[in-house]
Length: 285
Image (tube, rainbow, N blue to C red; front, side, top):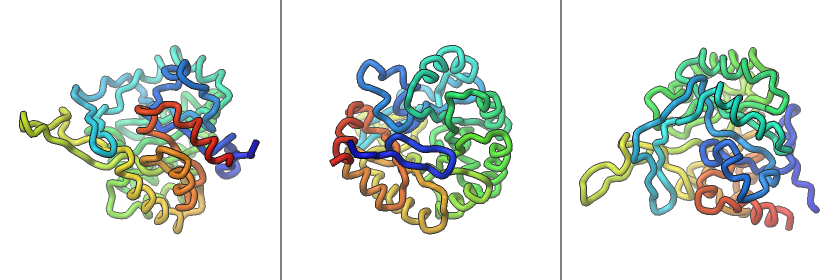
């Protein structure tokens, strides 16, 4: 069998370059009866905040011709319940576990990372500074290099684990943000998060989601993701984990050729949660 392992710098080596994308795979246990989770090189958890978050009111998901718009609003069970209800399951997985962390302010990010730093089953953190569908969800860090740099530096001081920053495409130029993440101690960047999107019901003449705007994901955003990765790969040396509309093995190869070291599967998990099996078979040909 072909060796698909990939080193993401000196701190982390994955069994293969395929991870789950945060927010599309829960905490892993929800899909454990459908497929072998250990096929993945890594499991990236749903975003985790210090306190529980109910998220945005429904309706908060709508299909589009080439993807979906979501306005979940970072709904999650909070750090305490995460440790009580999810840690045992995640701790026994052989796949690498990366916890996605969200926050309203810098202190919240720091507290979550600080409390999880000692957990041996957590290989690293993905820091969500790019959620487009919450009023206070970190997006201010993801569009301001100065704020981002301070956040990354502060988190770097809290952990020696793998530290990955999830970048937003909703900026004029992603390169200064990628450079800022690297300069302040990030081990990798993941890109892209969702694009701003909206949809209107022509019969009711009302927006199809409660918050009007949400995050567009799926095949429609793949060309945008590829472009951002090419740009970032020209200015940073740390690994890039590619996200955006990946459905099959050919998509994975395209992202790797663009400059990504690994990828995350997102929207495809909603309509084909077993896509990982075919992707790995394609890569092993």
